[in-house]
Length: 372
Image (cartoon, rainbow, N blue to C red; front, side):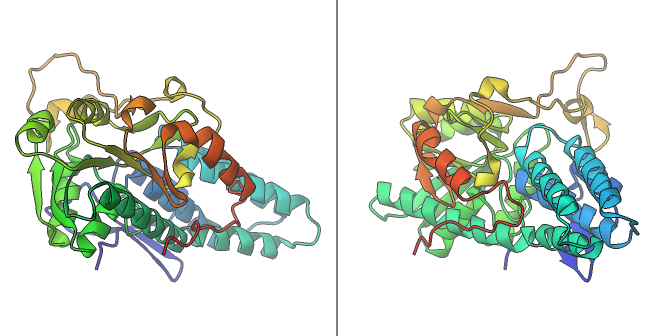
């Protein structure tokens, strides 16, 4: 049974406070958009898919307990709240895309006389609530594609995998992207070993990914970020697989800081490098990684640990939360719920799929073709 980071039932939303892991397993209530914004900003919930789901569900919770006098008032409320949620963490595209879709849906329902105020409210809330099961279905599909692709490269022999940051149940609705692929390999008894980086400065790998590995009883080892090249050289790694917060048209990928150097090391050691993400993480409006806005986090995340200073007082800091891995280093492929693509194939193959399936419509539900 995978970890449940997001609980939503009987119109009540709770999230597993990831700031307390692995020491304490505690759920906190999210009863408003303001609560959702704070939880995302403080990284009590993180991971691009989970950010969008929690943000939108916080809106659903607030919508259900707010009275509206007209569809126009409801539409304005939805737009203001969603635009506010987008400001919580700007690099991950999922929240921005979800906001755009639900704002467009709201505007469409407002101008359509066939729908009453209650109809409009119900349709918006239902579409938001569907994000949870849809995310799990999408992640299981992409994980099967990713596992199949990796095992095909190694003649169906068990593999050693290296991953970075946290991309599992704690970053999604409940299965995972890159960690979902690893989980699928483990379920098939094709995972020899998985290595996870500590992921400085916030230690998502040491605190969260390692926690998931232990919880799932995977054969796993934690390493420091600075050990990656030596690991590849001394012990060997079959493949590297990471998640993404934004993938653009040319295949450049924004992910947790440190991903870029993993890709360089993998290229040097001739190890296939994969990025696993749903199409909600794909941004068809940005051409290259140079266009991606990179969030910078507070200096205290570098200079302090659990509130205790570990750096020289007065030292300057630079703390970008993400870096951009050039498409040329993504040698294994980009794993999605529609299959595994080379970065050079995205513009030709993935963009038409996204557009043809109307993924901009929040009522659209898709888990990709049946990979069985």
